[in-house]
Length: 474
Ligand SMILES: Nc1ncnc2c1ncn2[C@@H]1O[C@H](COP(=O)(O)OP(=O)(O)OP(=O)(O)O)[C@@H](O)[C@H]1O
Ligand SMILES: [Mg+2]
View 1 (tube, rainbow, N blue to C red):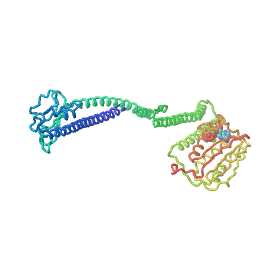
View 2: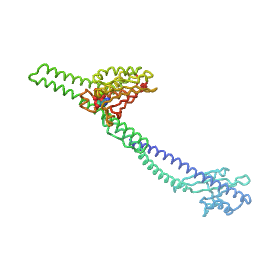
View 3: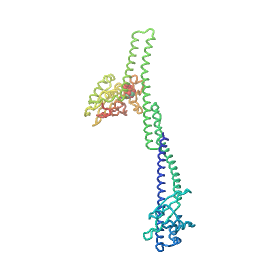
View 4: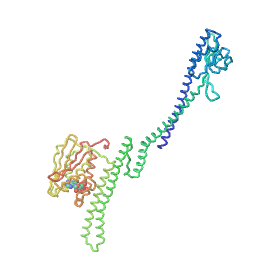
């Protein structure tokens, strides 16, 4: 493709150059011929004037008397000058042998001159050159007394044109070579990245996200490569996340399944088993099934949040009432663990918020549930509300074990648990915070976690009162 384009350009340039050269050479030779004619006519007229003056003085003057006026005007040229009378008899000829003197010299141009007109003629010589001839009348007292005929071999003009043509041809070849080289250079600078891009896009469509483009020389192609590479990086990251998610999810599902299988095998293989033991086994199995159901439910929630079809369904939310509902739902567990669960700052809420109620409820619930779940018995969990004109801040503080600085980002990752066995014992799936973060990001909010020096952890959710972005609205 690259070379076809360059060849097309070169073809167009070649034709343009040929047309230009032919036109210029035509113009040049026309000009040279015109100049020659003008020069010869000027000389012929000067000679005609001088001859006229000689004749006025003496109408019977001999040929030699024309020597001075004619040869003087033609000095330094290779023009042949002939003076005839009206009967075309040669009176003077600059040809040194002067063989024509006294003889009739018949030329077409002389006929015109004898009739009082100026005439010019260009003849091709048998030797290959060209001959230019002009003739003008000689007037004495308004009567035509004779003619002046000048002739010149102008092969030199053709030689000049041919030399110019040759140098223009060389010049054109050089130009075409230069443009050709430039064309190939430029086209590789532009086409190479495009070809690379097409190849890379094909690789991506096959699922190979590790492909990268090289920079290129031009700013534009460099930018294109950078954007493309960035996109590949993101795709690679997403693909990696997806793979990890599938593998983690399979692993999480496998654990309760293995538990259930173990229980089943134990019952089946037991030779004598009483009803109470069977009930114990079934209770364990029920707990595993419950755990399995919980994991599947959370996975489904996450998958729904991930899919672009699940937008937020905003409605006016009474933030204080939402927090009350969360605490009411968690209160039994808090009471069981003798944890003091209390809220404050409800009066700082100035207006209803435009949120997806169910999603935000789930997010705040997950965070408060964690706080109660991971705080040892006898501790406290404090939910505090603050608000500015545009934002609501919900902080959930506890005096539990806290979260080490290095883990604060990771706990929002899917299936991530600080203490795997401890959290699993509490029935944790490691998905609660991932769901909460997803929901909060969907509402254009932020979530962060801190562990104050005095211990425990503080989760801070910051949400805009109006979480509806044009593209999220349904
Ligand atoms: N308030 C907290 N104090 C101490 N550790 C916490 C707190 N909140 C979360 N964590 C840690 O972060 C991990 C991830 O929490 P997340 O809510 O995502 O999962 P989970 O609680 O284990 O499972 P699920 O929420 O499904 O019950 C928890 O396993 C726990 O180790
Ligand atoms: Mg949790």
